[in-house]
Length: 173
Image 1: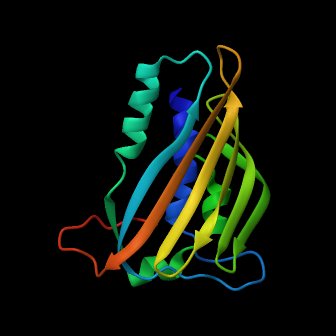
Image 2 (image 1 turned 30 degrees about the vertical axis):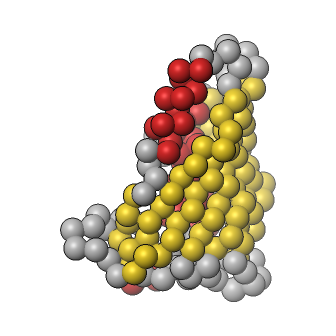
């Protein structure tokens, strides 16, 4: 379960870490420097045999990340490169193979397979990007050890809220 969440979280991190430069035509969409507020919504969490309490706990944990403020400096924004972020994979020895990487012209449409700790999931990210707002849906699907298929869908919306706030955490890109 932790691995599935880690891989789903990877998708979320990639979605907010840098939807800047593009591999395709359409030109890069550069995020504006400053304070960004991210809201996360668990749209679907379907795991065969999981108790309702665990579903509720997962929803609470995912949505607990809502309202997070992050400060991005102009230097960080200038260096953002979604293709490089996607190539890194989930960390902790995991890796992703992307079959689709369409990032540019105000949209993101990415799909592939990620593996970490011996578990493989299919991941897709689709949404829109603009200088002051990103809205991305992350879908994660995979087999669960107890049998059956799990599916988790999260929606992440990040909005530019103005200059960085005093004492706000600066994000390392």
